[in-house]
Image (cartoon, rainbow, N blue to C red; front, side, top):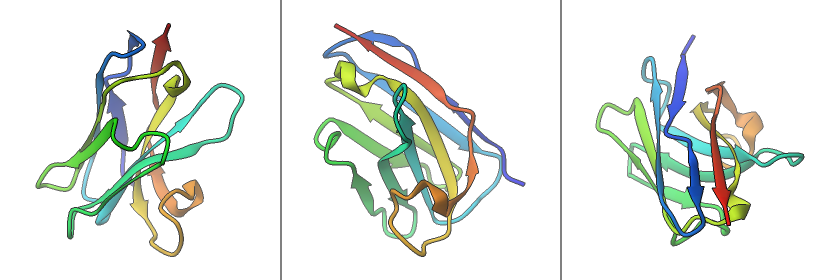
Length: 123
């Protein structure tokens, strides 16, 4: 079993920045991702990164504002979030153990999840 823990969520004003971090208890595969779930809505993919070639992918809604990164151990990823908007308010989850047989943004294709960290963006 792999334990995944997120941190860094907070209350921030619109236009501000936050940095989320995620650590996995051990290596759980080449690719990890961040998802988020706004109140009353489904979980959606935010950003994805693979250690093999550093490939990063983003949801259209966060491109040019969010940056995902991964350390050399492959067990930690970060999400730098700039120019935050109220619509970014959500519970942010880190996912590991991507099975690679579909779209990176399909939450059903990940084996391990953290408990989430809350990001709230006020006007």
